[in-house]
Length: 582
Image (cartoon, rainbow, N blue to C red; front, side, top):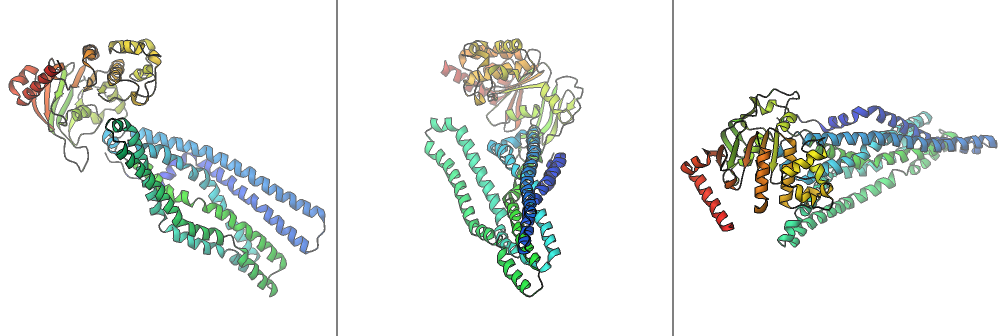
C-alpha cells in the first residue's frame, strides 16, 4: 500500500520535535552568548566617549575592562554550553532517524530493495544523515542567535538616531544582492552535486562488489574507467560549482563588513550640521562594527540550509516508500496449509505481469517441488508464499488466513527460507548459525551444524566455530556457506521450509550428506523446494511445472513423465547432463 507523502519541512519538524526542549535551551544559551559578545562593543564606546569627555577616573576604565572581559568569557562559556547541548540532542536525533530508516527497510517489499542500488541506501543512511549534523547542531542555536542579536542591536541604534541606524546597515543589502544572484541556481546546483556523489558511491560499491568478476574476465580497464569517470565527474562538478560561486562570495564578504564606509562620512555630515552629538556618533560607529560579524557567521550556514531540503527529501523518500501493511496482533492459524488463489503479480506498477492467475495448494507435511525453465516464475511464487511481496491480484492464505492479515513477525516465524545466495554476516560461524534462533545454546548450534553436515569442516578451521566468515561469507566456499545457511534454518525449526535451489553450490561428494540434512530439516514439515537437479525431487508429493508465469502441469514424477512434454524434455536434459558428468 502506498504511504502518504509527507512534506519535507513537516518531516524535519517531526525529527526535531521529541527533543525540542533541548534545542530551545541550546538556542537560548546561544542568544545569551552572542549578546555577551556585544558587551565589549558597548564598553569600548563608553570608554571612548569618556576619553573624549576628559574623564580620567582609572576605576571607571578598569570596571569597563572587567565588563568587557566578562563579556568575552561569558560568550565562550555560553557558546560551548550551547554547542554541547545541541550536539547531544543532534546525535540522539540522528540515531532515531537511522533507526527509523533501518526499521522501514524491514517493512518494504523486497522489490523496492532490489530496485535501488545498495550504495543509495548506504549513502542516505550513513552519509546524508550524518551531513544533517551541521543543521541540527549549529543552525538551530547559532543561526538563531547570530540573527536575533544584530536585529536587537539595530533596534537599539534606531533609538539613538534613526538616520545613523539606516546608514549602518546599507552595506548588508548591497552585499546580499550578490548572494541572491548566486542563489538563483544554487538549489539546482546542489541537487546536481548530490546526484554526482550518489553516482560515484554507486560506482564504487559496484566496482568493489564485482571485483572478482572483473578480475576473472580481465575487465579491469573498462570497469575501472566507469569508476574513474564517476569520481572525476564528481570532482569536476564541485570544482566548477565552487568556481562559479567564488566571485559572488568574495564580493559579499568584502562589502557587508564595510559599515564604516557609510557610517563615517554620514556621521561626520550629521555631526558637522549639529544634528548628531559626538557621543551618539561614537556609539553608532563602534556598535555598527558588531552588527555584521554575527550576520556573516549566520550566512555560513546557507549551504547547510540549501542542502537540508534535498537531504530530508531523500530520507522522506525512503520513509514514505510503500510498505507491506500488516497487523500487529498475532492471529490463530489452523495449520500450515498454503493456498494460492488466482494470483497475479508484477514487480513494478508500470511493468508487465510475471505471474498470471496462479492456483496452487501446498498441503501440510507434504513436499512440493517447483520446476521449469529459468525465469519462469518459480522463485517469485516461493517468495510470494513467504510474504516478501504483496500480490498484484488474487490472494495467498496460510492456515486459512490471508498473508495480509498475518503480522510480519508471526509469518517470518512460520517459514525458514533458504536460497542459493543466503547472506552470511562478518561474524563467527557460531553467531551466523545462531541467527536462526536467538538464545540458542552452543550445544544446539553445534547439533544443527552436525545435522547439516558442516560440523566436520567447521572443526577443521583454525578457530572452529569462532572463525569469522568475512563479509558475505567470502572466506568460505559456496558449498560451505550453503551448509551453514541450512544449519541456520534447522536451528530455527520453522513448520514451513522453502528451499530455493538451496543445493546449487553443493559438490557431488557432499550432495548425499546435504540431502540427508535436508531430509532431517523437513521431517514433519511443509516443504516447498525449487531444484535445479530433478533427480533430487522425484519423490515429491507433487511437482509443479512453471513456465512464463503459468502453471503448465502438476503431478508426481511418474505422472508428469507420462503426460507433460515439457517435463519430459527437462528430465531428458537432466539425465543427459548426469551421464556427461559421470
